[in-house]
Length: 588
Image (cartoon, rainbow, N blue to C red; front, side):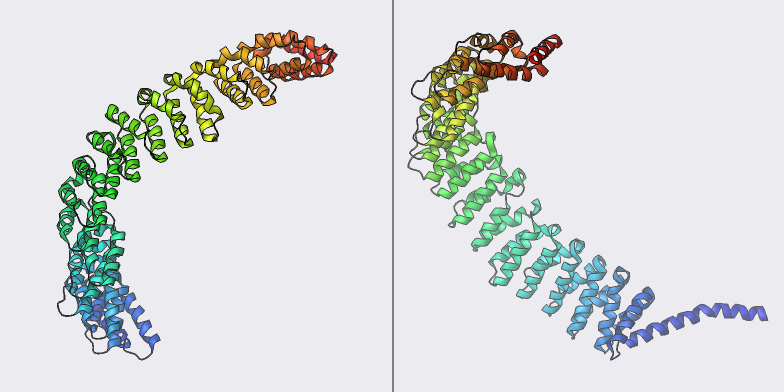
C-alpha cells in the first residue's frame, strides 16, 4: 500500500508543477496592469525569462481590456525574439489596437521576431480599411531588413501604389532599409518620382539611392515607364537602362526613341545609357551624332570613345563633327572620340590633321597630342603636319606636337633640325618635350645638336644642346670634338654642360681629354682633370698623364690632379695602379 501511494504522488508531481507554473505566469501577466511602472517592467522581464511556456498566455493577454497588459504582453513576446514566432499572427492583429502604445509594441515585437513574422506582416500590409496598420506593417518589414525580401518584397512594392501618401512613404523607407536585395522594386520606385506629393518623391529618391543597380528582370518595367508624362520618371528610367552593359541590349529601341524626347535631360540620360550598353548601341549613338542637340552629340562622342576600337563604324560620322561650323565643345569631343576609337587608322589620321587647322587652340592641341596617341605609324604619316605645328603660336600645340613626334623615336629624325630650336622655347613645357623627343630620336638627332652647339648668338641654345647630348650619352659619340671645343665657350653654363656631356659619353672622350691635358692653358688642364676625376674606370688610360700633372708648374693644376686621382683610386680595378697613385700622392 505504501509503494502504491508513493507512485501516485510521483505521477501527480509534474501536474502540480505545471499548475504552479501557470499560476506564476498568470500572476506576472496580471502585474502588467499594475499602476507602478517598475512592477510592470519586472513582470515583462520575468515573462521573458520564462520563455516558451508563457507564450500561449501572453497571446491571450493581447486581448485583455487593460492597455498596459496588452502593451506589456507584446513587449514580452518581442523580447523573446524568434522563439515567439507562433505569436506573430496575434501580434499582427494587435497592429489594429485602438491604443497607439500597444500598436507600437506589437510592431516592435514583430520586428524582433524577424523573418518568421514576414507572412503575418504581409497580410497586415494589405489591410483595406486602416492606413495606420499598413504603415506599421511596412515599417516592421523595413526594420527586419534583407530577411524580409522573401515573402515581403512583393507586398512592399504593391504598397508603393497605396492610395495614402504616408503608406507610400513608409514603403519607400522600408525598401531603403532593406537596401540592394530589394533592387527589383526600382521600376515602381521610379514612378513615384512623378508623385504629386513632394515628400513621396523625396522618399523614392532616397530609396533608389540605397537600392543600387536593379536586376536585369527589371528592364521591361523600366521600358514601360519611359512613356510617363513626368520628366523625372523618364530621365531616371533611362539612366538605369545602361546598368547591365551589353546584356541590356533590349533597352536600345526605347533609348533610341527617347533621343527624340522634348526634354534634353532625358535625351542625355538615354545617350549615356546607350554608351554603357556598348557595341549593340553603336547605330543608335551614330544617330545621336547626326542630331542638332550639341549636348547629345558630345555625349555620343564620349560614349563611342568609351566603346573604343569596336566603334570603328562610327569614325567617319565622328570626323564630320570637326566642321568649323559646329560648336567648340562638339569639335573637341570629336577629336577625343577619334583618338579613343583609333581605327580605321587612315580616316582617324585625316580627321586629326584636319583638326590641326582648327581656329581654336584647344582643338589643335588635342589633335597634335592625339596623333601621337594613335601610335608611331600615325605620327609618321602626319610628321610633316606635326613639324609645321612646332611653329604654332600656342605653346600647348607646340608642346603636344613635340611630344607626338618624340613618340615616333627614330622615325621622327626629319624633325630634329627644327626640334633643336624648340630647346629654347619660351615655355618650359615645350623645352622639356623637345629634349625628351631628341633623346628618343637618338643618334640621328646628334648632327642637329652639334649644329646648335655652335650657334654663335644664343648661349641658351648651346647650353641646351650640350645638356641634350649628355642625355644621349654613348649615342652622342660623334659630338665629342665639338663638346671639347665647347669647353672653351665664353659662357660658363655652356662649359659646365659640355663637360657633363663628355663625362656621360664616357670612354670615347678619354683620348680627346688626354690631349687637353697637354694644353698650354692652365685653366683648361685644370678643367680636364676635374672631368677625368668624374669618369671612374674610363679614366684609367689617362692616369700616367694625370700623375705627371701632380708636379705641374701651376699649383692649382697640381691640386686638381691630386683631387682627381684621390677620387679615382677607389674606383680603379687594377690594384697595382691604385698603389702607384697612393705612392705618388704620399710623395707629394
